[in-house]
Length: 510
View (cartoon, rainbow, N blue to C red):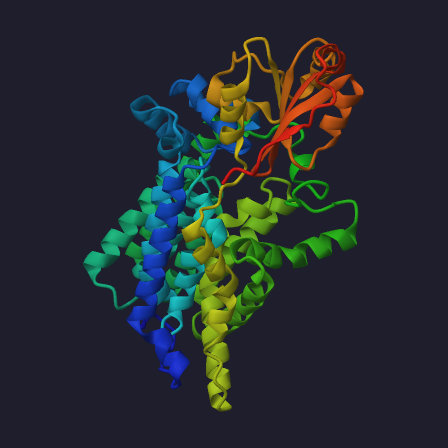
């Protein structure tokens, strides 16, 4: 991964580790690992979780025309992504592998695209680290195996960055520049319908092209800039009118505010706003690279400084998406925390890789070997990847818990399921189950007959409440982050002489 890039020095660094980082073998090893873990996790087909279930139910219940406008369950999902899922549902049903196919394919495409993108934007021996962050990153792997658009967000960011750098690179052939311009316009028109946060990257592309064209003063270039911006504005206005304006739901600020996920600051306290602003780069780094995300954020700052000395245009391209998203969050329009930051990770990783290269150069001038820094940063995610190749991430095993209940239940048994939406995804909206808000019904029901509860293993209060209501535990089985517990009336147990028997506890499911 040592190809040249516009405005960036690619001088080689001596040293064993530095030469190893430059070898194509390292990139090939990371590529094999990245592809293998994605297929392993995807084909494992773990259970739906509640965010996915809301989306699957919406797709199942609505036709194509209904995917425009307000969506049920407070969903904030781009309509074209919904349309792709609806088409897959009609073709192949709503199984986990079918519904997760768009995210999986987007994740694979992003993995391969990062190789030439890092060559162009980072250059030198250390372009490989930008690819490494994506190849072994836990968030990138797991979001590539779920029914959500976050990997599409990341892929479209890469596409826009690659097309922009190709277009402004003087070394690009006229044929290549034409194709880059077509790609930019295509993503400008369709991208917002696939990914809401891609508008921040489109804004950064517009600023970057304006800076570049200002120096060239080409009338043809300015025509392209005007056409691109007009296309983006028209697409954005149509999207806002038909879909996006309907998706601000009551409680969104509270859900994503300082008392929730932290995507919006606490506007009542100026000091809290400052703290929130300073913590955003760390939040993004931590989400993209677990355990060492703060170090990645610091490396990105170093990389931004190093890149700015050589190409202000490219610096704007990588930094402006974060600035625009930050402004939107301050205005209460887009939450910037956790998974909503996925689209910014390519920018962060590219800057961090540039930062690693700058630090290695600085160390080389002092005869220090610092090329091991990249290996340190990916070490925790690399260990996670190795473990997950052996045993994939099971997430919350709702499906396994429900299957066990249905294999053991009697016809007159009742079920209360925490996060009922997942149960309804597997057994239908009309399935006879007490919902989250009907726990009182379960407390009354346990006085008359057997009641199954499926709840988080951290919520023992449900068990205590049913025992206080007159129930007795006769069977329990732990699943991954869940407990299945069967209750029967204590009076019934006394009548049948069962109250002295032991509780049947089964081992954790492998």
